[in-house]
Length: 238
Ligand code: DC
Image (tube, rainbow, N blue to C red):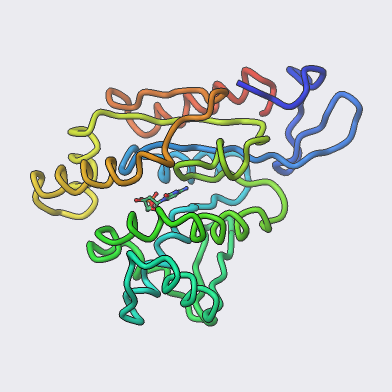
C-alpha cells in the first residue's frame, strides 16, 4: 500500500480529514474503495467517511446520472457521440456532503432516481465510452478537500496518487444475495444482472497494484469497516 512518500509513513495525525506530514504541513486525504457491483463498497465507504469525518463520494452516481439523462432524452446509450452531445448540453453537478452526495441535473436533485433497474441495465454501456470516463474523471478531480470515494477505477485511472487504496471483493452469489436484500428482487435475475455487469465493467475494474484487498464474503459490514479502519490506522492515517 502506498502512503505518499516514505518519510510520512507512521507519522500522520488526522486533522479534519487532512493528514499532517512529518514536516508539519497538511495535505488532503483521498481514500479510494474500488470493487465490483454489490461488493458493499458504497456502504463501507459511507461508514469509513463518517468515522473520518469527511464526505463520501460515489463515482458511480455520475455514470448513473449520465445514463439517466440519456434515457430521459431517449438517446442511444451505445452511441458515444450522442451521449457526449447530451452531456455537453446539460449541467450535471455532484455535490459532496457529510450526509451523502447528491446529483443535480440543471439544478434539480435526481439522486433518488438513479438506482432503478432501467439505469442499472444501461449504465455499463454508457460507462464504457472513453469520452464519458473522461467527463466523469474531470468532475471528480475538481472536488476539493479530503474524501472517501468508491468506484471501479478510482485507485487506478482517476486518483492514482491517492494515499489509501482498497479493493473489496466478494463471491458473485454473496453479492447477489446482498442486492436482493436491498431491492427485494428475484435472486436468479439479480445474479444474472450482476454477472452481466461484471463482464461489461471488467475492462475498467482491475485493482490498483498498491491497493489493500479485502475479501468481504464472510464479513459483516461493520467487520469490513473495521478492517479498513485498522489498515488506515496501521499506516498512521487515523
Ligand atoms: O458503483 P455503482 O454500481 O453505482 O456503479 C454503476 C455503474 O457505473 C457500474 O456498473 C459501472 C460504472 N462505474 C464505472 O465504470 N466506473 C466507476 N468508477 C464507477 C462506476
